[in-house]
Amino acid sequence: MRTLLPGLLVAGMLTTQLAVAQQCARPVEKTAFDIAGLKSQLMVTALSCDAREKYNAFVSRYRSELISQERALTGYFGRSFGRRGQQEHDDYVTSLANVQSEADTRQGSAFCQKNIGLFDQVMALPPGTDLPGFAANRGDIVQPITVITCTEPVHVTRTASAAPAVSHRHR
Image (tube, rainbow, N blue to C red):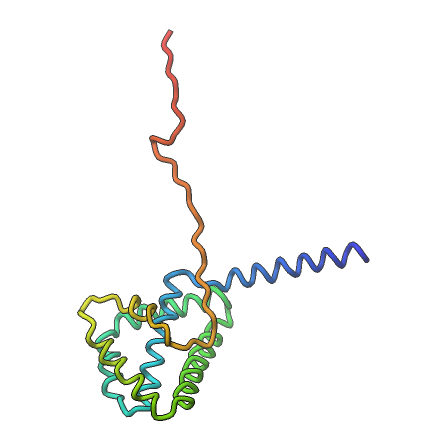
C-alpha cells in the first residue's frame, strides 16, 4: 500500500497537469476572449449609460468579425470541456457581464464618464483595422477568468540545404 499511494499521487498530479494544459487557449481563442471582453464591456456601458444606439452601431459594423470570434470561443469551450462546452461557454458569458457590471456599480457615475468614449474609439478605427489588436491592448477590460495562451510547439522542418550530403562515387 505504501508504494501504491505515491504512485497514485503522481498519477493524480499528472492528470491535473494535463487537464490544466488542455485548458490553455490557442492564440486565435485568446483573441476571441479579448473580443468577447470588449463586446461585453460595450454592452454593459450601453445598458448603464443609455447608449444602446452606439452599441447597435458597433455590432452592425463589426458583425462578421464578432461572429468569427464567437465561433473561435465556442471552439475553445468545446475543446476544453467536451459535452459541457456550451454550458461552460454560457457560464463564462454570464460571469463576464457580471464582473463588468460590478465595475459599473463600484465606479458609480464615473463609470459612464470613463467608458462611454470607448464607443468613439472603436468606431473611429479605420475600416479593415485590427479590432482584435485594439481589444488585446485594452488593459482595463475585466475578465472573470485568467486566459493563458498555449505555447505553440516548435516544428523542425528540414530543408534540402539542411539534409545530409550524399556522396556518389563512381568507380
